[in-house]
Image 1 (tube, rainbow, N blue to C red):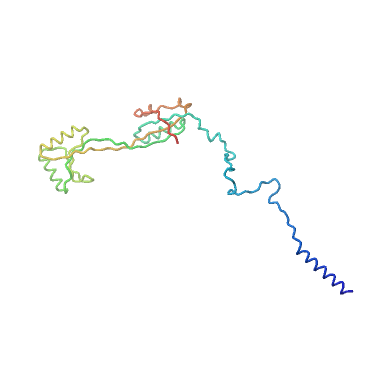
Image 2: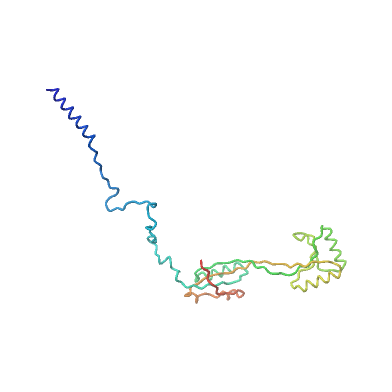
Length: 224
């Protein structure tokens, strides 16, 4: 009897193990997120035509186009020959203008005509030529002792060309072959460019009252 009981128990255990192997295990369905929460989506998975083109929250689109419809006038004032003056003028306008900018340019102009003897081979030769000039009663000359024109002899700088030509003719009659060279001067000029709305133009101060040598003209506004 005892052996029959053990045999039935082992048979039941074997049947249970066999049935578990044949029966597929039930799968539990888990939810990725709680109910009502949007599914997480990678940026690379978003279709281009579904990209949100709206402005960021908290930004006012009206503020972004605040100056879009503002009618503005543009001016250029100058030239200022002193940099401190153009900065002072800019400070005067900053309270009423939309924007301002200081512009620096270099002006080139003929400064006169230089009459001279070309550079000699050495300092001693230049001094000897100077003694020759003195012996011929030539006045107003000096030997250049340094710089790009070292050992040349300067015979005068003249504003008007006819004065330079007269000097050359005088020296030619005394047997000296001299040259004439146009001298160029360069100096900086400063301009103040600014724009102002039409509603504020009546408040625009006249810079010519403080700086009578400048001009203040309306110009075409540049587009960015």
